[in-house]
Image 1 (cartoon, rainbow, N blue to C red):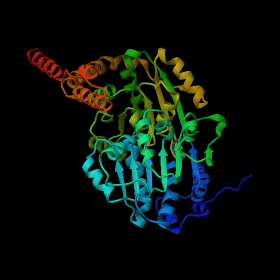
Image 2: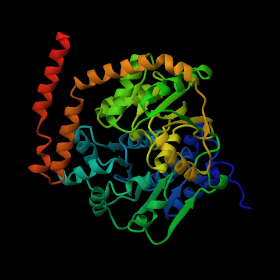
Image 3: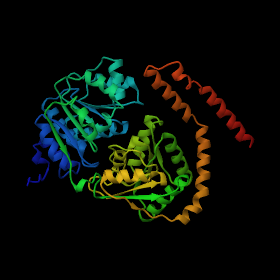
Length: 452
């Protein structure tokens, strides 16, 4: 039986790193940290797969910072991640630990000023945390920085990065990297990406995958429930789930996941109108506003966050006690990432999924994947009848207000930009040239509303 590692000092970390861990309240390394940190310090490529909330970021940040202080230069490490919010969170963790050595880091993500980012890159920060699309844009547009001397390449949420959505950008980035480097890949769900890993990692890769709980893919502390409801009254059931939860838990933060940007925005507006103060997080919101919304939620100024899957991966918000799937994800793996926003680092948490009769097969697929049966969460059907009209009216009013904004216009402009960047023109983008038509229709609707 392998001897259990008692504290971080057993991992042969430098004294300044041990002091930083202690100041952050970190007493004992998690299993993924115990197993991966020594192998990374030995210079091995590493694949780490563990449940959400298991301390994956520190598993690569600590050894990278130890190696950096032995031979400090910039750009020393590149960390790639699929979402902007996760990039900022990882950078913050590096900054917190690396404060003692005056660590320089920069975040390269979309939605921010490219000129400012280019200037930051030209100053050769030690750590660059980036989303693939924006970093590829910088490699295309400027030559003020080089990635040819990096020591570490980290893919966080590696299964998502290697899942096909970022192939073109990753190809461009990998061509700008040196052949000799350590490649570190971490995720909560790794299996379907392992074949692609061989293309970028060395032959000898240390693979550590957490296997316990009899194949259960979510943590023991997570209480997983479902509510069966008709599809046309989902929003009313959602409100009643929140009210029922709040009856016994006044202060815990709640994350609500839905499927599209439009639904996310509508749901946020509807809930705000009926007295549930919340903030929204989705791809159609400007990046500065996304960060502001997330900070309000993290700081507990607002206790409900409504989001698309941009918030499903990696975000560590200790106060989240309930995750609600307003729309259940089509892929069981995404369910694992969503519900992993609660019950982190040994804390308790609950996940409730709203299930329509059409979702039963999805529910069974999720249960098979996570290795546990979801139990029913009881709500009072009689109370739902009393709030049904109020919620329906609030949602219709929210739809009218959303229609009067430039929400859809922004979406079409973004879609057009994407198609042009991908080399499409003329017929392919013609359908997106009706911006003026949209404005005219919106103007007429406003006039009709005034008359009525």
